[in-house]
Image (tube, each protein chain N blue to C red):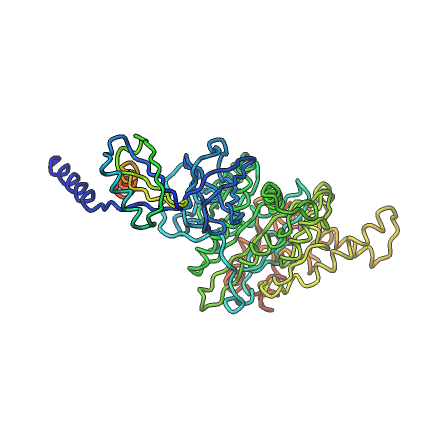
Length: 72
Length: 506
């Protein structure tokens, strides 16, 4: 069984959270376990961690990436 | 006018923002399990490369050196203060690399390519710090000399481009001076010089950079520095980084001289790292691969064949011995790896023979083939004469009565020893060295007082510069001393001596 840790800001609705969970279930199989962490530092979006692999879709990281690409 | 500028900028930015795609940033991450003495154990983080750079929270970098199933052992490149247990660790997917290119000339860098001189660095290309050495088929024999400008070395222990010549000796015997003088002498030789400081005092490095700047040598040199206060990982990486920069130049067909100052401290830094990583200690507590540590570095110096660019890397590693003991572990290792060594002695240094080269113990295994013809012509028997003199001088130190031939040997040896003394930062050109050695061979110095040999030779060179510029040009351009030229030079020397003895120059 795999554990998925999802970090999200407070503003994420339960509906969105459930959609993310079902997306991961599709990928990993039905027996995936979910854990939700709230961190307002990421502004929006979410960070999912599975097996040491990190899928970062948070607004804060995207902004950082954007800054790097545009300013150089 | 201004409005349109602002509009342009804002429309450019809008375009860039619109072009930006949001896609998930996917990476592997681990957690710091233990931290101590600059060594970190990370749990998780599978599929890492050996030597990969890891990024810790707070922008600190480390290098993965111990890969196992349950985690990674890494050494920290920067200060360990900001890394805590439980921090997340990100694999960057790249091994340590160095910027390369002409824009590095005149700069001071640290071993992971960050500028240390406070100015921005613009580079496009990078090369990994650890690369395999050129293969056998890519090389060609060393055939071009690298002039050090130091007569004792150029005449008896000649160095070729692509050679690895070790400078070995106790502390305070002038090892670094020889290396720096060699750099200064490359002014007109189209050789790029890289000075790599490993575990040196920062004040010493600053002084060396100052010397290079003042003599105009920074226009074709660069410095890669890891000071004594940098982490062992940085010191370990420094020579490989310097070599990567050199390879960047060599790829473009340039000749490069790299000075590793010094490899004893490099071995010590590696020992520190290895012991902290719990690798089994061997002789003198050095790990088992300490020979490979230096052999893989020095194998990367090469003289490339024309199909592969034809460039070269000449290495001048420096080793500091303790109490003149060249049979300690690290010195014997590096002696056996290199193509010869310049052995400096405390005793000679204190008796005023500077550079304090012990010609008996110094050798150059490939340089003879690369020596200029002119130099080969006049330096043939110097080594034998000098070693005979040294041997005889010991026997006759207490006695005064010697037979005629021994007396001659002694006086000639004495003159040669005086001639080979050379002040710091005063390189001799090929022509000057040829003239001095020819004068010695033709017994021009006979009858000149011991104390006056220095001033005599100085005036002689001045006289030759003004009166024999044709000859000087021909020696410089061809590197050869034809029989005709030799005769002419011999005559000029005789003329000078006559006028000197007649008091015109005194």
